[in-house]
Image 1: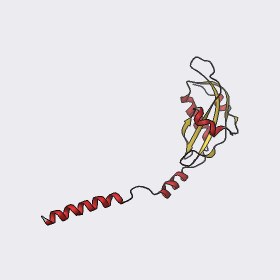
Image 2: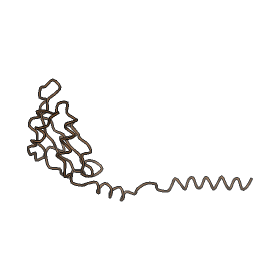
Image 3: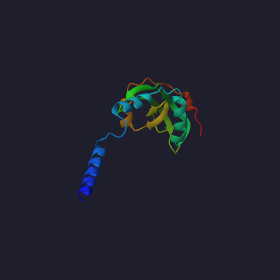
Image 4: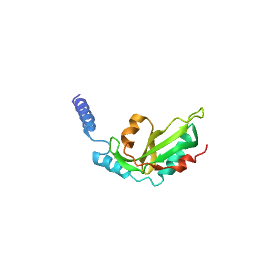
Length: 141
């Protein structure tokens, strides 16, 4: 009986001790991984063109297309390369919706997310230096 109590106590101690060990990467490892993914997006225009072709209801005849160079900006947990995109696309009825801004976020040099809600985009794109983006205006279905 005594050995049984000793066994139960030992198992309980192991269980509690197992909870105290750190499983997973340390904060330094997480930061290093995050920074390693901050690679300048060399093909950012091509990534955005491919995305916009599938994202827009009618990608043909876009007007007033412009884009900013990717820059590192703080997006919450850390910095990422982001680019602002401005465009005027047609709605499903064929009429133009009006100029809209979007924010592209890049991870490991590739497009990861695209935000188009004004609340999410306004702060990031308020000082963006836009340049013409004629490739977006030449998109087809």
